[in-house]
Length: 97
Image (cartoon, rainbow, N blue to C red):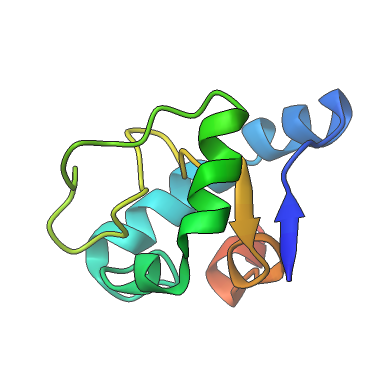
């Protein structure tokens, strides 16, 4: 199932406030996350075409050796993503500060 990540400004602001994208990126770089190397194999040409049509510039190379191919400097670069990349939130992301 495909979901398009078009959140409300309030949701996006809250994500920034709790530094969720930072947590996900750090976890991905540790090689223990859902954003690990190989998860990009779940994506097919249709989803990548949708992203291109939505203006996403697909990377020419992987940015982080142990991270997903689509993991950018701050977060996932894809707008249209597989459901595992949209709905899953691990305990690390939910931990209270």
